[in-house]
Length: 390
Image (tube, rainbow, N blue to C red; front, side, top):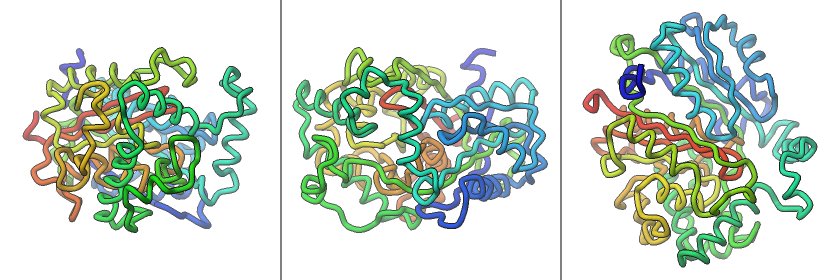
């Protein structure tokens, strides 16, 4: 079956979240199980109906095994490829192929992390990461990873295209304005351009408000074949296109610090879906840092290369702007428990269902979610649509 034939053959019919922000007293596995149970119930199923799973974690190399055990599953399909924050979007196409081939009937994609309150927190992960030392060419310079890597990309974009600190701040302020419309978002207080510019510097030109949150959180979604989706109690979000690309691991190995592999995954996903950036109603971008949003708007084709800074000016991606971007508040203001990609998919599904209340994009029929992993390393794009887009 070709990619075009896979288009719309599978739908997401259940989503769930748990432990958003602070999950004190709970393990990563416990909040993953809570989110999974909510997603499965949302799909009108029980855990016994799940016979496929896709999951991974930065805290354990064999994470799928204890997850299967803890949830009491006997899966016929297991996928645990670890690509960082883009993983859960990258898991979608393999899950589609397993479903359409008949290998399984219902796939649970799930993630959980208590990186804020757990014993194995961000500091512990950084130290474990250093012990493995996959970035031997960068560690001698003692960069503040991952912030310094993204700061390097931001500096280059500013030098090459005239992007300004104010442009970066526009991204953070827009995310906060969306978060203020989302009761689940962790940070909802007012944020101005001046607040971002005047915040504590982390790695020039990025201040702490240019950087994503450090939170707990778990998310999950359930995928089934399109014929079964029609019998589920929720409005299906059909998978129209999905693609993943990896060009590098180290930021210092990028051929061009202003061009990411999203420029490969994006066009491939659009081609499979048979739509263009102009058709998309709501966009979710992995905003671990403010420069990400600018880079991905360019690489995915929403504006020309080098125009991202000017594209976001004057609240253009905030509520009421020209393009609805990161409507839940993103990793900058909603939630970011180490790997954020699963939450991009959840928000896209909720928007297509019309469930987002004050932040709902009217008439949303096509949604794009784009994940990023490592230091601008892995990129994965998915395009979801309502029944009207099939």
